[in-house]
Length: 140
Image 1 (spheres, rainbow, N blue to C red):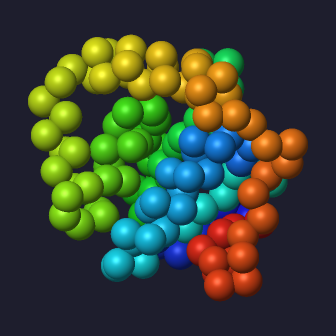
Image 2 (image 1 turned 90 degrees about the horizontal axis):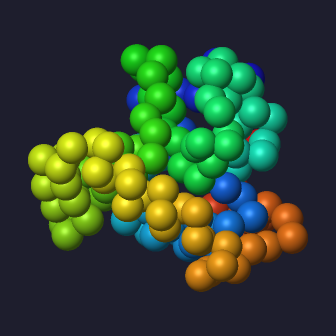
């Protein structure tokens, strides 16, 4: 299943029931001009397989992950978000400036938003179902 991810793509794993996460996915899709990213909910089979493979504690990291099949590596939290942004063109790619902030500080802010995302943005009863036009960007 993990082997089905093309080496020239990166897989964004997101909380499929989170409204903020779903909006972020749509934001990335709209700006992914180089067709760099594929998407899957954390709750999907491939999401669960990658969580198991990288031994991710979902009590500590439960909102966004970035898997790179070429290097077989996983980015977490704020690092995942910034690595995604750097591929999106102007002005989103300017977020790379936040790499100068130490990871533990970036992740404090990230964790605060992640902890409150359901309260602030709401939650769906089920994972987002992509439209037929977007279906090719998602791995089931």
